[in-house]
Image (cartoon, rainbow, N blue to C red; front, side):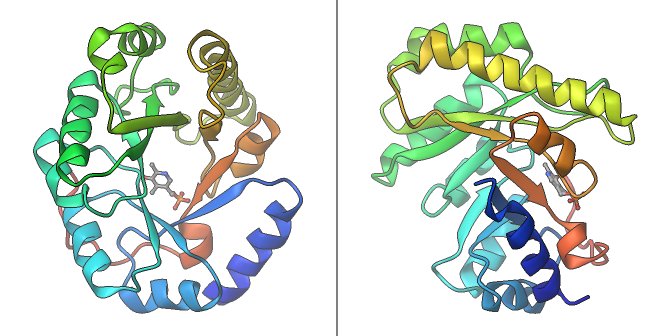
Length: 229
Ligand SMILES: *Cc1c(COP(=O)(O)O)cnc(C)c1O
């Protein structure tokens, strides 16, 4: 199946549900992204700043770029002028820097708080207590140039379906609690980004509004000339 065929399959599958498809194009060549673009896809996810910056400069300007990988504070400045959504905010320090760089660019940058839901040591993200602490902080409450539009989570790798579903449900329950406590009157807080190629169906079952699908659209990632951070 071609990239266009794969996209069409997801469009049809997600069509009725209202779940948004983020095409994860990390490590993919520009011509693969153009193929998806020509098939109508406009929202792409990348996880390394250097790779994202190069692609953004070379590819059509109406692409909406999401950063989905760990973001180092000192790299925010490279993406602040164009990024549509930073899905991987995992500390108050990082959010503070995004707010600062957004102000410099006269923008308000949409962000998701990345929540740690996996049963693994390797995944970045805020714990349940940490996210509450962040939202309660004066520092956050005084920020004018960031808008938190929801939460993001990555489930455990290769876990049994039951565990994966439980992790997604945990994120959904946390989202509902945070919505009521902090964003009751804020319609912008509505996204739960969860689900990838291998587990997006479980994520949708648990209430995902945004799935991040890479290899199932583009095929296996082959080129890897950027160092992961
Ligand atoms: C790579 C990546 C994805 C996509 O993974 P696939 O298994 O290729 O669909 C989704 N989310 C994040 C955060 C990623 O780094």
